[in-house]
Every structure is written in structure tokens, then in C-alpha cells.
Image (cartoon, rainbow over all chains, first blue to last red; front, side, top):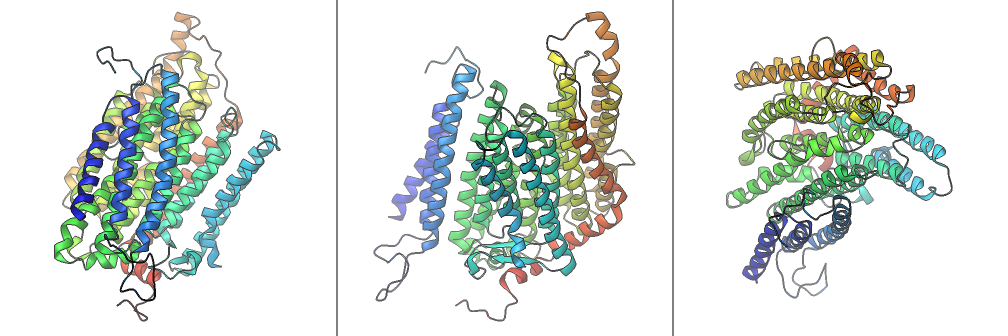
Length: 113
Length: 515
């Protein structure tokens, strides 16, 4: 399970970084979204992966899952959700104001998308 | 009594909410007064808190929801926090005083966003919890996105897109760092982190070190340290003047975080992780100064020039922090106040000059005579002296104290060489800008006739007053240099004894009930 989730986080991060470095706003937004997914998963795992343990404390249970990362992930999800919504609006506004979707606002005739 | 600690965060939040609610019911003039009054009360609250901290000589803490320290979130008001809060609230008041002269019109949420930004800044300076620091960073950033884009326009949208994308990437890195620290050390309370980091088991050293340096990268992005400074000149020169003036404190949030984490968690008592930032901080800070100074010389617009001056001042501030002695940190904290006020005054002044030059705006080309040129030119002269660190104003005192503190350190030749060279470059560039804007104006207006397509707007006292106010604050820093440096030196002494902070947050270890 550890290997699988590490791979998922790694692939998500790699894709996110690659997309965030693209020159058009849409892939950049997607890349930042993937990065935030990766970091949310990562935060979730910081409490260690456990199976079948109660969320906080139960009477006849040996241990409990660490509740703090879950709280952190909730906060991080809310924040990244809001930020993504904001940057999507900003990217649309940039498309409207600058006339193209290049991140520097200049049309590059060489590239076709 | 102890509720005073959270007041600087809650008050602007309440004021911002109120301003948002009454937007339709109350005319703009009244909302402006409300906003200014809220900022005055914020200054009062911060002054009360500062008084309480300085009088008691202790570090005040506030446990949210009464959860004991390592488990709940804790707010900590030590001397550094109240110093930053004082600078922020004063700066915010004068920036708002300028903004109510017309900048705030045209967008519905300027006042609520401004208050929200202040709330986020206060929170970032007060919190004693690493994840909470992230949350307050996001609050102040979200407000700053709105303020940066205030009134729109292609330049602002372009600069804003870069700013938002960079900061989102930065937030992601911050979360990775926080997650790694929690996974290895099991806590996010900064005082507790300091204890746990000092006792890191050897097999985890590499991971914690990586997380610490990730944190450093995030804070370097916020404070515009090289090579992560590229967003700053575009963002600061594109946005409206009062927002740029308020943003003068934004880079200092990064510097504050570096100073806090460097002295507390990775301080010299940090065991195997001691001085984690030091090998990086000083060289990067000095390089930032060089690059910033080149930008100052190369800038074609006054506002961009001022933005690069901010980069230089951040480099200098981090140099002072990077030297790491009590004298240098104390001197750096004095310089921090000076550079914030001076840069803010300069942004406002650049706006005033741009308004007086019609279509030329703030481009550094010869143009028409600015209305009221003698007064504006005089202010420009004073501000330029102030920001380039010539005697007798506060810039000189700050730089002199840092240099004096640097003499005894091995990095002295580098610090001296770079500081004096960049200082000279700054003076040359500002002298050139001044003579272009004010001396060569007259001749060209005769040659070219009407170079203006837009009627230049004359300055009014309402806009000049905030600039004079900020310059007066710098003058006060000179007049009260003795008490202020005493204060910053004791602040530095407090920072270099992280045990004081740890004891204040976690209590003196008598009821130690960790298993």
C-alpha cells in the first residue's frame, strides 16, 4: 500500500510540475490542481497508513488513526479549492483582457494548440 | 487581559466583514471613514499589546479554545511579533489614507479586502503554529490577489496571473514541508518543533533537513530572495499605489518567517540541525542585493525602479539576519521598519509623479513640468536620500549599524563591498531619475509643445499628507533612534534565546506528561 500511494503522489506531482511549466494558462491551472491533489494525498499519509482503526478513540480497539492529518487535509482542500476557482477566473479574465491564453499574454505564432 | 493577543487579528476581520455587509446601505464616504477608524483602532490595539509585552518583559501566549499548547493552536506575542504588528498597522493606516483619495473607488470590495489582508498579516506575525502560519499566509495572499487586481487592466492581470500561480506553487511546497515535518517530528507547534528537531533521531535527519530547506525555499519566494524574486517588480509596479505601499510589508512576512524559523527551530541550539539556513541565507541575500541594484539602474519606469529598491532592501535585511549575531539582527529589525516606511512612501510618491505627468506616466523620459514641482521634487529628494541610506536619515543609521555588526564576522569584506557598491548604484540611479523627472522637464516642454494627451492631475494635500506621514515615521526613527535600537536589540537577544519562547508556549517543564 505504501509503495502504491507513494507512486501515485509521485506521478501526480510530476504531471503537475510538467503541466505548471507549460506556456498556456489552461495546462498551468490543471498542473496546479494536480499539485494540490498530490499534496493533499501526501498530507493524508503523514499520519501513517492504517487499516480498520477508529477515527479517534474507541473502547475496544488497540489504537487509533491520527486525526490531525485529516483536519489538515480538510483545511488544505478547502484552501486549494478556493485558490483553483480564483485562478480559473483570473485565467479567463487574462484571456479576455490580453486576447490570448499565453501566460505572458503575448501570442506566439509558432505554437498551435 | 490575555484576549488582547488575538485582538489584532479579530478586529480587522470584524471591520472587514462589517464593511462588506454595509456596502449597499452606506455611501462610500462613510465607508472610507469607517475603514480609517478601524485602522486607527487597530493601531491602538497593537500599541496596547506592544505596551503589555514590553512592560512585562515576557512573551504573552494565547491558547485558542483553551487547548493546552502542543495540542491546540497557540498565538504568541513576543517583541518581534509586536514590532512587526506595529509597523504593519501604521503602514496600513497611511496606505489607506492615500487610498481614500480616489484609489478605492471603482471596485466594490477594496475596503473589505484591505482589512482582510491586515488580518492575515497580523495572524502570520502572531501565530505559533506552522500549519496556522500556512493558513494565515493563504488569507493574506487571497486578499492580496484581490487588491493586486484592483481596477483591472492588462498589466495587472498579467502580473496577477504570475503572482497567483507562483504563490499557489509556493503554498504546495509549504504543505509538503509541513507534512514532512509532521510525519517525522509529530508536531506542528513551533516551540514543540524546536524541542523535537533538536532531538531528531539520526535516521530522520536527512528528511527533516529537506523539509526545513523546503520551508526556506517557500519563505524565500515570499520575501523575493534570488532566484525567486522575479514576480516582485512586475507585480509591485503594475498595481495601484496604496496596494504597492501595503505590499511593502509582504516581503517582510517572508523575512520574518525566515528569522523566526531560523532562530527558533533551526537555531544554534538545534542540535544536529543547527544553523540549517545559514549556508544559504547570506550568499543568496548578498546576490539579491547585487541583482536588485542592477535592476534599479536598468529600470525604465519609476515604479519599477522602486520595486527593485524593495528587492535591494530585502536583500539587505536578510543579510543582516544571515550574519546571525545579536547586533546584526537588532540592526536589521531597525532597518526593516525604515525600509518598509520608505518604500511605501516612495510608491505613493511615484504615483503622484505619474499623475502629474499625464500620458508619460512614470516613464523615465523627459516630460512636462509636474504641477507643484518644487514640493514634489523636495519630497522625492528626501525619499531618495532616505532609501539610498545617506546621512542623516534613518536609512543611514540602519545601514551603519548592520555594517558595524558585520565588522567582526568573517563575511565582512563581502558585506562591505556589496553594500557600498549597491548603495552607490542606487544613488546614481535615483540621481538620474530625479534629474530626468524634475530638471530636464522644463526645456523639453518648450521643444515638444504638448506631449500630453491626458491632462495631468495636480497633487492635492490629501495625497501628499500620507507621504509626509510615512516620512515623519522615518524621521521619528532617527529622533528616537536610541530607544528604538534598544528595543530592537533586546528583541534580537530574545530571539537568540529560543528557550524563552519555548518555555512561554509549553510552560516550564514541570508537568511533563508526554509518554
